[in-house]
Amino acid sequence: MVVKLQRPILVGGLGLSFFLWMLESWHHSIVQLGEFSLLSTLAVGGGLWLLQQNRPKGSLEQPDSMLVDRSTVENAIAKAEAVINQLAQEAENHTALETLREQVAHLVLELDRQEIKLAVTGGKSVGKSTLIQVLESNWQENQPRIKFQETVSLFTEVGDKSDADVLTEVAKSDFVLFLTTGDLTDSEFQSLQQIKAANQPTILVFNKQDQYLVDERPSILLSLKQRVQENVVAIAASPIPIKVRKHEADGSVQEWIEQPTPDIQQLTQQLGEVLAQQGQRLVWLTTMRKARLLKAEAKSWLNGTRRDRATPVIEQYQWIAAAAAFANPVPALDILATAAINAQMVMDLGNIYQQKFSLEQAQTVAGTMGSLMLKLGLVELSTKAISTVLKSNAVTFVAGGAVQGVSAAYLTRVAGLSLIEYFQQQEIAMDSENALNLDKLRLTLQKVFQQNQQMAFMQGFVKQGVKRLLPEAQQTEVVA
Ligand SMILES: Nc1nc2c(ncn2[C@@H]2O[C@H](COP(=O)(O)OP(=O)(O)OP(=O)(O)O)[C@@H](O)[C@H]2O)c(=O)[nH]1
Ligand SMILES: [Mg+2]
Image (spheres, helix red, strand yellow):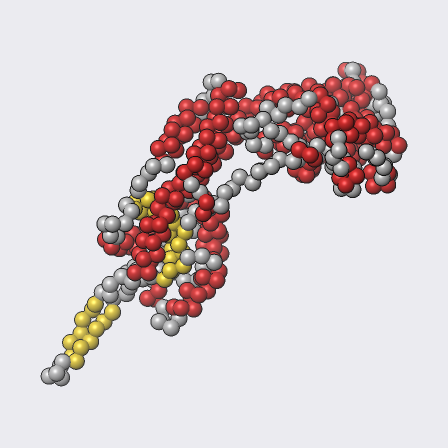
């Protein structure tokens, strides 16, 4: 394979030493990549080509809701269980384990639930209770059994349940009737979007249509349909009583008040069809959502215990890097990009997060992160910020190498925290596949850097760094 160096693209004015360093790490990647087309990926830009042959496949987990079947749900439950088992392995006595396991057992039973849970929700006084009453007395025997559940009213800002709580409740049901009494308000629209985003089947019910003139009703219905692009039905669960007047043959006039029957046929028909055709699938979908939530909960416990173990590791490498850079203060860019991100740290953190790397892979990751940090300008930014803080704390004296030392520590920290953040987002693999997604890594780096860039944090960090690096006597002078 002929490798033609496209120096202008690659180097972009970064300086010869960095170029040499890149060449060296590049050498590893050539060995690894084999026939993989280096040149084409080179065009993407320096630093972005490594490990690309390993792109994660199938990272889009969300199945089309129409395609849900029993085995996909069983699979989702198994995934949740795998995370829980992993947690048990890494934190034997974790307090959350018992309830997590109970929930898994419960989900397995849920798969065969016969009764459909139907949530009726919406703003205050939209007719939720009335509709449930009317539906219950109209529901026919031969249709699947339904359990109607009225939620607390949305958008009231009273009581102890927030809208978010209500929507969490709603998420546990198989089907949602969302009631409104006219054009949607913004908050109604947003709640509806949230329910939809959760992959939950919904009918938007336009209730109290009797309050509008007969010829106004279709246009309201139409505008609702256009706005939400889904099932919308107009009803009147309890129409306003009307006065009836009758002229008798003898000329007398009789008047009485009549209660019109509820106008809900369209809704019962639609609901009946959906439930008859998809009842089972609705239950599976709900179970699927719950399995995902459970997995996320277990994952967050797992991430918590792993972070507890990873934090001291980062701190350790942070001060190793600081000491090295302090003792050997060569021009900042070189040492920071290469020495600050220790391949051994990548391996140690990878081990904690069950992302096993060979030393060679870890070196590649470390090199990639270094070059990303340079490209993103993080090295320059932090070096500047750190020397500013140092100078403002010690007007007369800044120890040689202090800027490099503290910067190396800081960049190590950012790199370590980014790796943690990145690993946390990875699937708990049931097969041991892991690949580095560089776009994601870059975004994570930027995010973590921004989080750790605040002046207050920087000042604390510099003080801490100086304390580590300088003997007591000099310290007082610098930090005072
Ligand atoms: N005109 C008219 N009024 C209705 C209709 N449906 C319900 N109502 C009236 O609206 C009022 C509120 O009805 P509810 O069923 O209590 O409404 P809700 O959403 O349960 O109310 P909260 O639970 O208090 O938020 C009652 O007075 C009902 O009679 C309808 O279709 N037309
Ligand atoms: Mg009510």
